[in-house]
Image (tube, rainbow, N blue to C red; front, side, top):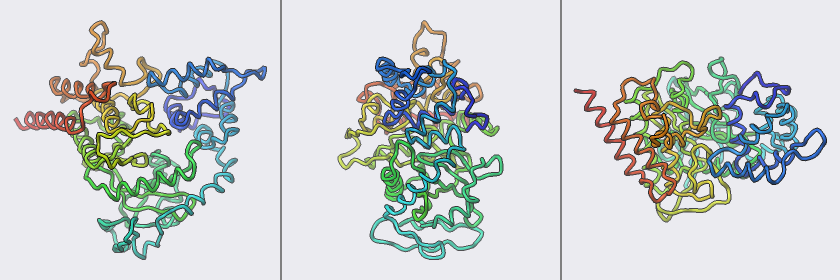
Length: 466
């Protein structure tokens, strides 16, 4: 969030990070279209015609964000954030409006408050106080030991999760303190479909995700995401998947409680956020290996994540990778080679495979997204940046592989890591390119991906000990 943004700020001066967050709101279900046709010239005429709309649509095939393109174009005028927020509010896209001007939450809060309690009424999981039993999410209900007021938090029973009351989560997060943790508050960042806060249970840190309805996600859909995450993490247990401790569904917002990840996300660590030390080559390859192991486990158990990205790869105190955000995950009873179809296109544009943009759900789409993550690991660059050319990281490979271009692999790799060896880098780069093949049948399966990375990690270990 850029606190310097006001209603008078010109659209062209909105930072990339904020534009990207807006794109995540408006790109799904093509809500940007509604914004586009609502934009008027001073004369009152529509600023954008059907020809403009088709041009904006065309950038999707180039794996670009139509929202970004619209903002870039509209930003060439003297239109302001206030103009955009007025349109967003008129379309009842309140979450996007509050992203730009948080004060708009106070204006629309009464409307959102009327919606949110209904989320709790649809909850399939009963809630019990902390001093009673923890609730099993699927029949039969299996009680577990209560959380005690001891200095250490008990491990949850393997058969289920702890059930918290909303009031308890408010208490441990300082009433969901929206100030960033670095500023003495409780907000860790934005997660899938909500905000993540730091809390303490028995003096042990946890991460609490408070889910919030968005303009492109109905309350019923939010409940589906909430229950999908719980059911997925109930069935699937692996050291490279995030650890779910419990949930709450008796208050205004459904909440999920996870084990705290001390080193945040891979995206933040690659950017050296909060002055963190750069990741070494050895650490990066270990993280890639852990992520591949988590994906291999998902695919082996017939699940497709659908939103693999560096922001969803969390790192614990030992930098072990943990895949997170399973609200979009889908299971296939027919096996991992199955392609499913969906009317709802979800995911993050900078990571999406061509078939995912057409609504096809397949494990090979996860492979494509992981290819982008591997390029991030190699380069330290974010997956998209409108101020560079090309904007999407996945497109850098065309310049690297084109001998007529100046960019080489040596120039592409992150200079902040000094322990890399070119032969190992070439192996990972080649693997990334194979993962990013436009034709899904030519991408490797996750077992092949994992095997390649394991070979590099073994090579690094051999070099390290000699």
